Amino acid sequence: DGGITQSPKYLFRKEGQNVTLSCEQNLNHDAMYWYRQDPGQGLRLIYYSQIVNDFQKGDIAEGYSVSREKKESFPLTVTSAQKNPTAFYLCASSIDTGDTQYFGPGTRLTVL
Amino acid sequence: SQQGEEDPQALSIQEGENATMNCSYKTSINNLQWYRQNSGRGLVHLILIRSNEREKHSGRLRVTLDTSKKSSSLLITASRAADTASYFCATGRSNDYKLSFGAGTTVTVRA
Image (cartoon, rainbow over all chains, first blue to last red; front, side, top):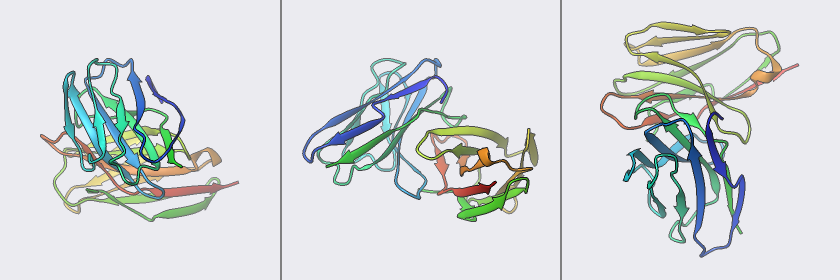
């Protein structure tokens, strides 16, 4: 899992609540990413950030928000607008976009 | 959008046997990467092969890339129980910010 940490490992949310997933890296990487993984499927990109104070929508950004105020941190908020948020969320970073990505251990979010 | 498609979806082999899985993609790429994911964990990068390379080795791993057929293969030799995992290919394109991941091949190595 390299120098990327995600917390918490498991998260339970009631319907209608916003929750924030933490992602921190000490690899001095400029680029960071958030993916969603559903059972038996590959990774789908939610948001990515190439540099501090900049981020872009990925393929499935609706119902999610992010911030990139520090190089080391890229938190993801799952809002109540996300209708089916139960999934495994993975954060990754890379020296630059398109390069090898280093993944955190993931956060499993369950909506009760 | 998933550019990479792995085949087969699942593979079960005996310890000591070789495991081969394939990845096909649709558009031109700059590089192709293989990752491993143990159940419930993050992905671990295994190997990256660039579009101008045809074969690459790393320990018991051998990756080939055929850009004319838009396909790649990952061979794991002398498999071990610890190789049990899902394996994903991901393609990177020039001037593109992201990697595109396939749905993965689940490999089970029986003791």
